[in-house]
Structures are given as C-alpha cells and as structure tokens.
Length: 323
Ligand SMILES: Cc1cc2nc3c(=O)[nH]c(=O)nc-3n(C[C@H](O)[C@H](O)[C@H](O)COP(=O)(O)OP(=O)(O)OC[C@H]3O[C@@H](n4cnc5c(N)ncnc54)[C@H](O)[C@@H]3O)c2cc1C
Image (cartoon, rainbow, N blue to C red; front, top):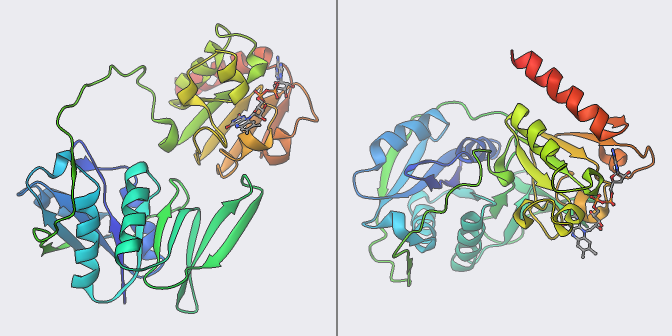
C-alpha cells in the first residue's frame, strides 16, 4: 500500500492533539506514516505513541534546536520523507498556522497542488478527492487534487474514528543538508492564560454568545454554560464589537473557524458571516427567542425562548448530571 505522510506537530514536546485525527485521515487513503522533527534523542517515546495511533513508519529528523525553529525544518523533513518513501500518495498536515505554512511551502518545493482547509478526504478510483467548504460554508465542494503528490491541510474535527495501531518503525531522515533560512525563536514571554478553558479552534465543545446577551456582565452566562460543559467560549462579531468579550473569541468569516463536535449558539441570529465559521460543527444547538432566526436553518436542535430563562436551567441540568 502507498504511504500517506502526516506532519506531526509537537506542543511542549508532546504530540499535538491533532495527531490522531491526521493519522486516521491518512489511513483512509493508504498506509499512515508520521513525519516528525525533534531534538536529538527525543524520538523514542514519541515513535511508540505514534505507532499506537496508527503510524506504520515514523520518519524522524533530529535537529539541534528543533523546538525553537519555525516551520522550515518540518518542510525539509517532509521533502526528505517523500524522497525516502518513494511511494507517497498524499501528504496531510493540520490546518493550524504552522501546518498550513509547512504544507504550502512543501507543495512549492515538490511542485505539487495544495488544498487547504479540507473537511473531508477520500480515495476514489485510485485518486485522492478532497471536500472543502465554499462561500462561507454554504456549499461543499468536492474536487480532485491536481498535479503531483497531493498536499492537503485538514480542518480539526473533520474526520471521525481512529487508525488501527501499527508498528511505528523508526526511519531516520537527514535534513542537515537543508540550507533554507530558518526563523529562530530567541526569547519566549509567557502570557498568563486568561482561563483554563480549552482552545477555541480545537475545542470539542464551543459555547458562543451574541448580541442577544445584551451586556458584558450578562455575557458571563455564556462562560458559565461553557464551564459546566468544559467548553471553549466563542462570540459573534456583534458581541465582540459591543465589548462583551475579547476579539480573539470571534467566530466567523473574519474571526476563527471552529469545527467542534458540539456548537451552542446563544442569542446569535446566524448571519452568513457567522455561519461561515461554525457550520461544519457536528451538532449545532441554537437558543434564540426569534423562531425565524436564520441560525435555526443550520441548527440540529433549537430552543425558541429567552436565553436568560433557558440557559440557567440548562446549566443546572448539566451540573446535576455531572453530580
Ligand atoms: C465583511 C463582514 C464580515 C463579518 N464577519 C463576521 C464574523 O466573522 N463573525 C460574526 O459573527 N459576524 C460577522 N459579521 C457580522 C454579521 O453580519 C452579523 O452582523 C453578526 O454576526 C450578528 O451578530 P449577532 O447574531 O450576535 O447579532 P444579531 O444579528 O443582532 O442577533 C442577535 C440575536 O439574539 C436574539 N436574541 C435577543 N435577545 C434574546 C434573548 N433574550 N434570548 C434569546 N435570543 C435573543 C435575537 O432574536 C437575534 O436573533 C461580518 C459582517 C461583515 C459585513
């Protein structure tokens, strides 16, 4: 079976939470092979973990200072892994900031087509077919992958299931000859985390509030529901513009794109620009007092009612279930 390379990102030396999903996506196309850039000596434990997550082969590039170099070592490692493998049917990266950049750079280096922000991936008649969303999520576009080895960035939470465990056989690759200029991180300034909540872009559950909350003080209700569910907090642009919450919480066309398993919209009308950032969520629940609100067109479950009546009851019910 041909290999499908997956760029593995690290977070504080541990496998990023996207890894399992990327390997599951790779397993739909061929034999998953992980590509990882580590400090010398750091690969052993990670390779075993990658095997358990489905990587038959783990291409390891060891590089002094890997943890403080931005993206170019990963691009060199992917290119070296493509050459070392000899039979690659696709390269999959996360649709994270680093993943997108590494994917685009690799595509240029190996003269291949690049498709970003895929929400689906399949093997059809021996070729790779990718699904992307277009026009603010109003349409799903399915397309072949053009010339060369397809390079694809995958939106988090797009693929269900896991790849079966595999050998995780380590294959060292040499990127010492790569002379591409690398941006080095020379200092890090830790910023106190605003909250212990999960990251909005990758959270399993997102609770978002809109203008219907009415004020910054009342927006706390969104946070209370989110905390009862262990969710991230999002917002509509109207809520952000009104100062109810921070701008980095904005979901939508000009905010972040989320694709959680559960998205709860409170007092959000569901304008096309908001939906562009959330309608690929697996399950959408909307609470809105206007039954004609467009958010109900994309919601799987809806409550027509005053959120200030409904949400406190919902929080009580969630807390009661959690015991
Ligand atoms: C170029 C461009 C880019 C944009 N990008 C984004 C973007 O990235 N993200 C984004 O969100 N928007 C974006 N917008 C703005 C977008 O068009 C909408 O204006 C915005 O999403 C509306 O936010 P909202 O739903 O919170 O407010 P509204 O549209 O005012 O809706 C408020 C909702 O709350 C409901 N409500 C009120 N009180 C209650 C209550 N007590 N209980 C229950 N329901 C209640 C109302 O029925 C209403 O449906 C963009 C617009 C443009 C032009």
